[in-house]
Length: 372
Image 1 (tube, rainbow, N blue to C red):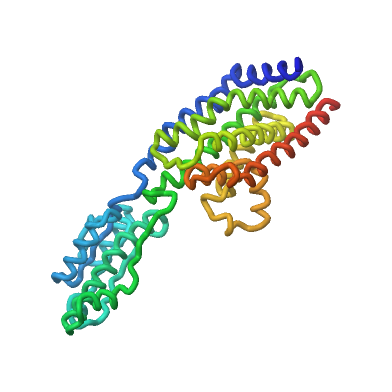
Image 2: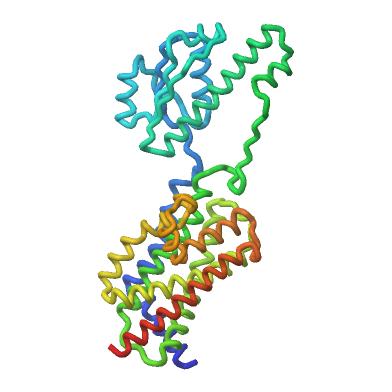
């Protein structure tokens, strides 16, 4: 027990006495908490600027333009006489889409013919592209349905029958687990876990590289360090995974106890991984460079930036070794889907399995260093 307490105190001293480690583990978390979520607080992109090229200049084309600009997704900020000027506005990033209403648009509608409307979106900025397509496509479909319904009624079809022919199935969209269908609700829970992991890996790995030759059995040393991490992150982890999501208005359907039950093995697995990285790389400057380099791959391998099902099998195997992968999945299931502990037990076992594996590796590396 004495050796465990000694290792615990030594680890705490290494965390709080080293200015660089304090900046990474404490100050960086505060900065991320204030800066990272701020751009996403609006949840949805609204009023994306789009250029209107109305070659028909009719009542129907004006009505279509009015409906498009009335949607929350886009606004027709510019009225260009031709595609040359519209293209220039998009290239200058003053607009992110072009709506072209062709000549003869109204005449084709009155004759009951199709009148193609061209919609160009800037796909180099994918979120803008989606909003442009969504904001213009819905009014186009609605206007087309109304024109077709009016044509059927003019032929003597009853209104109910005409509506059924134009729209045989009523579509009701329900955004499950993300009521606002917002980007912040989607990205922030996973981002908070990744921020915790990255700062913890860098900070604790630096502590390990600067540690003097320790005394005592490797098992007691490792257990003491794990106790130190649990004490430090008993404060930081609830702030990031419970307090901050509530502050930013993110949905929380689950139990905070389940979140903490996930957080404990996540913290221990991440800390042990940091010890393994430090024992292999040894030098502080090398640790910093390597961990900075793997931060972005960890982001993409976590399974929320790109679907897990679409990740190649060999990369998916690597992803399962990273503590953030099961932690993010479990946290999202608990906070946004209302999952209980039995529902996420496979993720809990996954994280505790990583703890067991990393303990074995860390002990082996500790013994190997002792005899060098």
